Amino acid sequence: MISTSSIICRLATGVPGMDEVLGGGLPEFSFNLIAGAPGCGKTTLAHQMMFALATRERPALYFTILGEPPLKMLRYQQQFEYFDPDKLNDSIRFVNLSEEMASGNLGLLMQRIVVQVEKYTPSLVFVDSFHSLSLVAQASEPEAGSLQYFVQNLAVLMTSWQATTFLIGEYFSGNDPNPVFTVADGLIWLRQSVQRNSVVRKMEIMKMRGQPTLPGLHTFRIGSDGIKVFAPANISVPRHSGPAPGLERLRMGVKGLDDMMGGGLPPGYSLLVAGPSGSGKSILASAFLSAGAVNGETGVIAAFEQRPNFVRPAAIADLIDSDRVGLIRPAVTDLSVDEIASLLLAEVRRLGATRVVIDSLSALELALAPTFRDDFRESLSRMLSALASTGVSVLMTSELEDRYTDLRFSPYGTAFLTDAIIVQRYVEIDSRLQRVLAVVKVRASAHSSQLRLFHIDDSGIKLDEMPPDQEGILGGRPTRRRLRAPTAATPVEMP
Image 1 (cartoon, rainbow, N blue to C red):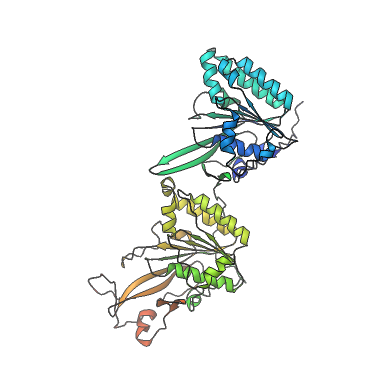
Image 2 (image 1 turned 60 degrees about the vertical axis):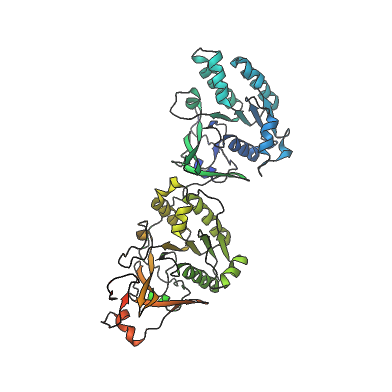
């Protein structure tokens, strides 16, 4: 009689982000294949999981079928931070099967594996590289059923020994007919794509029996601490129907701007600040974070500009130094939006931040690997939803060409994703180039429709007063004063 109440224990892999992709961890006693092309990180992934999982109570046995000895493999693996030399020959043992491999005798190879497993009774078993064994076996024993019988027999034995097993192999396509793909409980496929000068690694859980996994390709990066997987920030939250009653709005840090926005930015809203280069977007973002610090709030900056302009107000540098504002400025290239979202969410949780600044979307797009730029809008939507689920308020800046007659608010068509929009522009007044600012949108909230002149000094952004001769510009009445685009052939009346 088969029990229907069996609960599968899930093991934590020790690989950041991978348990989430797997749907909660790795099923214990499962028979898994880690596959992919050469150089995509298969051996690194196997070693990282082994060093994280192996203990004296749960020992690991690592079979190497390659011609290279385990010592050569460990020479490179010990460069990673997860490597623990104290576990070698204690909770982790390596066995070289190159002689049995050379013979091409699958029966002899199975016999050696059985002897070692019975000797050490491991809870974790790794076989690397299993694909090499397949090639030799096919060449030496042309009988069609030999390899399939070996794989099925190995899977049954490992399950009966209650061992969680990993076969590591170089495979280029999961569509090829292969008995390993059929027998395996889990199929973890690693990919490495090259586009121009960009190299991107991705992981796909093609199969994992008994549990739902996150579908799709998930980017990962190999660093000094090993592999880190960036699961998609796919948290759906309802769009704001309006500011929550009873919650105090956030101060923007610019005198007069709160009034233009109907009292400030509602908590949890996302704000897009769009404008041409030098119009003051980053300075407004700095003021937003400084205003939060005055109120006891912490913030996070994701800076992608080559020289992030967070010097005005000057106190922003002190906020970063005192850890009241966290700075994310990735030093690596070929990023994905999911990787940025992971960094942001981790920093928000660490600081308990309530304000986030992304400066700028234009530079963020350039920092992405080319393969991620086509779906930039979709990825950005997921990231904003994930940030919104934490309750933070987000200010993003976006670079726009000032064409003076073009009223776009974002070059990516992402303006509809945000809850509020502030636009900055250049105008010519009496043969002088000046800046204007307008609040275009605050979702479900009244706001000013005025265009306000402003200037920037050492203390930040200052909205100009409205002298009588400008009331027509800002109040909607006719005026004799003309605002011109710097390169326009004809004067443009300001509404």
